[in-house]
Length: 144
Image 1 (cartoon, rainbow, N blue to C red):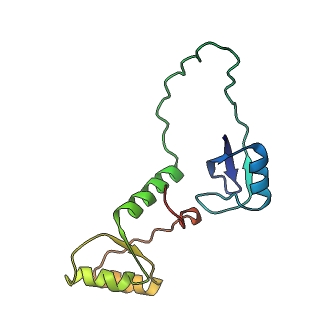
Image 2: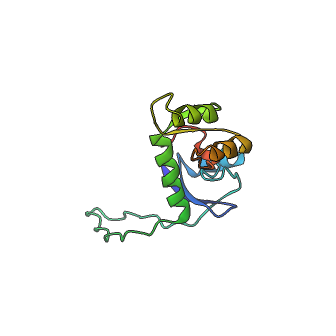
Image 3: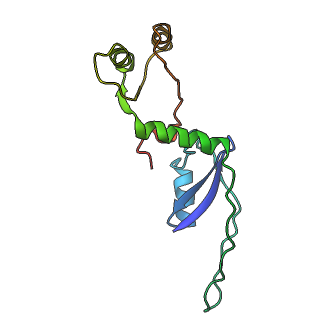
């Protein structure tokens, strides 16, 4: 398994796991590699420094890693994952379900879904808190 450091044309860095260099090049040529944050398919492989084990002895101990400060993209992705893990997807019924919760017709719970700008504004005018959270294209499938 090969792990490559990749970057999209928008500057988002991420890792890609491939069976081989040829597998990566094949998937890239077929447009199957895209940024998990923005979905952009123009990807470049960044230089990396692989560890080579040339001796038969035990590998040297790696120095302790200092905690890196998360990038804004990493913080945003954590927030998106938290929302996805702790809310129910009600799809296009979002405005209707938000009103039912607000007016006590159903038990209170965290929900997410889609609605129009007009419906979102109407909910706000009724005193119902609504937060717009754009999701990255890479999260259309399962969250890992």
